[in-house]
Image 1 (cartoon, rainbow, N blue to C red):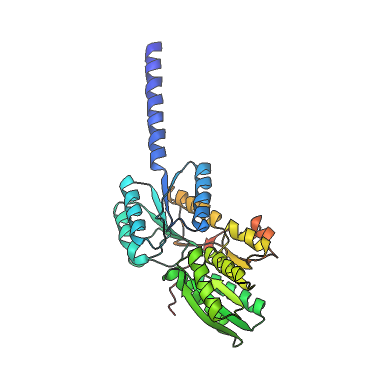
Image 2: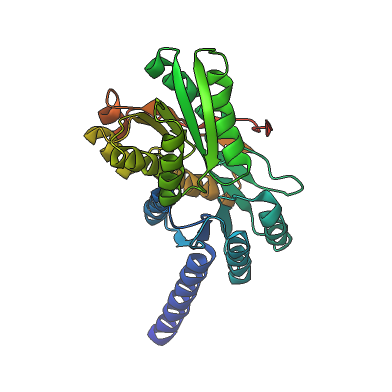
Length: 324
């Protein structure tokens, strides 16, 4: 009898180990940023990894080196599909490039989340979009710029990669600035989300417009690039970016840059895992989950760092692309 008891115990133990291993393999979430050059994407990954550790998920993060490598992002997503991960969350830069990969994941019955955007990728079945309203974020930056300039001044805009992120952020900023006849936008140029490119763009802009008052950049890294150029030319101008990356917060404290639209990228990363877990548990989740965003400068920097400005995400709506 003892012999049989031992045998059954061993069978149960093997089954439990098998099920635990199987569950671990199935609980894999892939995070697919568009590139590795921005700390924003590192913060997303960090938040996702920490939340994954707390909830028992294995988090895989892969990204092409440059955000202009659309084909590289598609290939990585295809690799994730072949690995049969449970969930894929992608921060797509070019919707036309990523559409085929999203549809391939859907065909393979792998749910796809899109993070850092509420703009629908047409002709796809995305499970949920997670991010802040980028048009409203651009507007908030515009309102802040108006206060800094007191309704008068010259402004230059540094844009990311042509696409919905760039259109919505710059578009929202221009909507607000355009209401003030005393504020003149003297030019704009693309820096492809990169610091070095933004430094070059700003150098050219300041040579052409030495009396420039403010630069708005579609991302923090480009804002820092703009500030580097201005300092190297002996110019002190206002700079505003978007992201709320830790390095930018340090630069605000130093007085090197002026402000950023803080969107808590690490908390967005955690939210991806929270929402994926809900989905895998068959809980109802909204098609669009809007996360908070707030302009951060020296006045509210410590509160932002302490997480006091974060508010719970709410059910949002599609951010329709406003072409300008």
